[in-house]
Image (cartoon, rainbow, N blue to C red; front, side, top):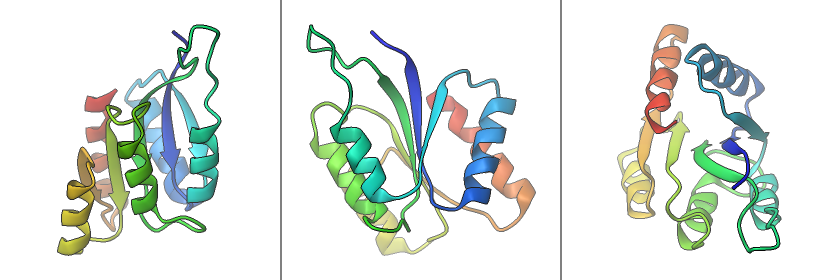
Length: 136
């Protein structure tokens, strides 16, 4: 089995940098792959490297997913992940500014493991990211 990875699918460079910094501070020692839009994420997932035995070389341990992505929306990426047998068991955490009840309910119906609303304050944001280490 190959290296362990976290896919971070986030279009806001400041949020992405903060998420990566907090995960590193929490001693998450997995490679973090940053994908900046939904189309890039789907392309990456469809081109996963498979070895001669049919095993995925790059084991994805967790996906951190923003919903408001350019090109392909995060909810569509979530549906792809949860409907593809290669990825359906991987924990997916949505990290979004949307606190809309219907959006959250739809995310859970589509198989998200956790939905975290991005706080406005820096300290609140850091605290929410720290909770992600339970999946690592």
